[in-house]
Amino acid sequence: MRVPVGRPVAVGRRLIDLKPELFTAILQTIDAGWEIALKRPEVKPDAGEVQMTECLRDAMREALISKKLPWRKTMIIAPGTESRSQPGMTVPDGRTDIPLFLTTVFAASGEHDPHAIIECKRVAEGDAHLAREYVVEGIDRFRTGKYAANHARGFMVGYVVAGASNGVVDGINKYLAGRRRKHESLESWTVAGVVSAWISHHDRPSSSTQIRLHHAMALVPGC
Image (cartoon, rainbow, N blue to C red; front, side, top):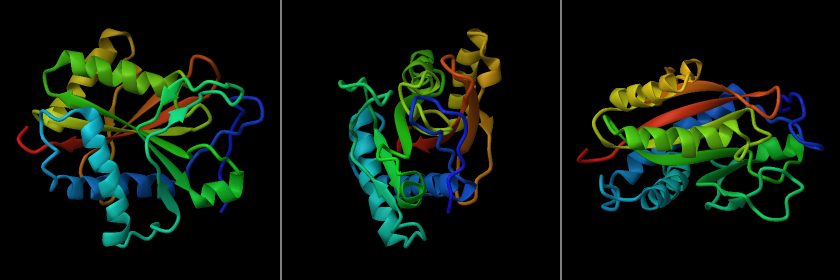
């Protein structure tokens, strides 16, 4: 299986663009993992992002095995790690929430850094501050290349701690529209086996490439 590549983003690196079966598998693993994570008492509206992300990561690993997902032997769900947006850096400039390694991508590209990155944020319907954080500390980390600089796709999970997913997405889109970024709005996107999924497209200011972000909204019990 070959990995489609695009224009170089940094010297010596090629753009990784996951095929549909791979990014669909990631979204389905998030969804299956969240179903398991919901059974843990730590997952509640007043829990912090780190706490819920630890639960989600563990549950995604469990889901690979317990649900016998077809890609369980080719997907590695790694712990959060420090990251470098450019290969020449000697000091990390970020920390990823859930990095993923895919053996098929490694075999085709030889890329040792994560092949997909999931960023997680708390969100709530009607909360403008959390909507801003989702964009500034989430979307924009991918858009500017701080995360996934050589990836064509990124992944985000919104922990919905109040209200409904559609209301949360409306708030995020309102924030983007208010910054003349309406063209970056999240759009509903149907994915087999995934309850709530959206997609957005973002131009990267430092290059001629674009990144697509896949968004999954995860309802927290009691919200």
